[in-house]
Length: 625
Image 1 (cartoon, one colour):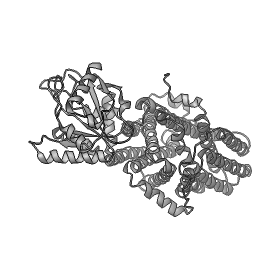
Image 2 (image 1 turned 180 degrees about the vertical axis):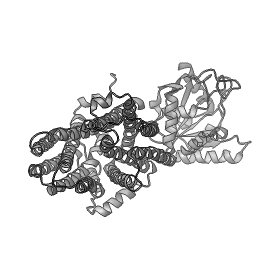
Image 3 (image 1 turned 180 degrees about the horizontal axis):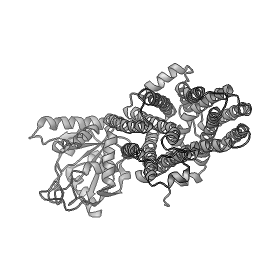
């Protein structure tokens, strides 16, 4: 089968019309919003204080509807067929833009502010349905690529809408040109929406709660019990906190600290937006087309490192009032600043795309849109908080904008530490991802034999201290590892193992309490339809050969009959963490890079399981690898 990438989705009817509809909507919103801001900024009838007040009012009016209307939009999106709902929302956009066009034509600021509020309301209804639709039209291997393209398209559309507003503003009668443009692009968005394939209702019997206050409360309460979902939503909201902070301050930063003209503002916004787009597109390649949580911490680390460096790079700026684009780029000292900004946003794209995909696949289909609505509510809240923080730090505490950037970078470290402590799976997957992209190159065979649902026991040979991490990285389902108590308490790793619910075990004659507790926990996990992995040898091999499988596996299956899948790790003997030539050996490690094969065979029914048979199966897999 021909290998495809995320860009191939742009050739499909199930994705391209949706992509264009989303991008045209984002472009139109920002064309209108920035035209309004430019009109206010350059109007002679407003004082500087009035312009600042109107600018903040405009930002608040657009965000405010997300708090109260997103939950209602989520309910409607779960109840209705989604392609039809999108067409209705786009028709509403056409109507709004026709009236807004009149306000633009006559340059009526009060009317424009009113329609900006209504556009925010329309976006609040569109937000839940646009992301809830993706899992219905995309395959599991396309979710990451699809989200990456949407993230790329959204930020580039925001950038182009901002630039287009500036370009049109240089013409005679600019607001009339904007009026024509917003109506035209709203019509184009509706036309593209007509080609979106049907996405059936996920919960047609849902009774809609029309009270915005109780609807908001119910939406948030429904998400909070699911710790992974809730923390993922907070992590996404923190991304929008950072993004809003950077995007809001960049124009002032360019003017007051870089001495630049409007061209330089456009350059910084372009670098930031393109960085997000590139980082988003890299996610599919980095995650091997699956929702890989390991690149989320990688993204947050990158944002912090280059956010801190942006502060120091700002100290080396050669300030000259009215610096144009060419003069700014010609100074080598400024390249570091541009690279920092590009990498902050690039790592931001890597950070947010897997999180968006995660909440789509982890939420139940029947209430997915409501989960996304909750995400939109928190996103809006965090963007408002970002504005409040900027006001406090810049006006009350009188920090400079570079110092604000430093606070954001350090704050990102604190927030990331909190989120990863609440959901250790993020940190666990990061360790796995780093190992599999540095000292190990892992090839998989037969892992499709692991069922998508239901209890199952994996058994594997035990070669190195990294065996559990490599298996966890290969298996799409969370795995509960039964491991020697000594390994489960290794420094640093012990916190990760606890977070992913590893089950420590000891020999019965050494620690009967731990032995019995382990079997009780295994039984509990299998009863809960989890994947449990054990190493029946009971210890690492010291010869490279498989040790005799102990009969504990038979006791487990007798207590909880479940299918058993034999697995084999090949290529780890002599590696960095093995007993031959590794740090577990008495001499210095001899090999730092290893090519590893992880193989699995078909499940053995519970009534056929014996320790001898499993050992034979694992041995055979090793000879075939």
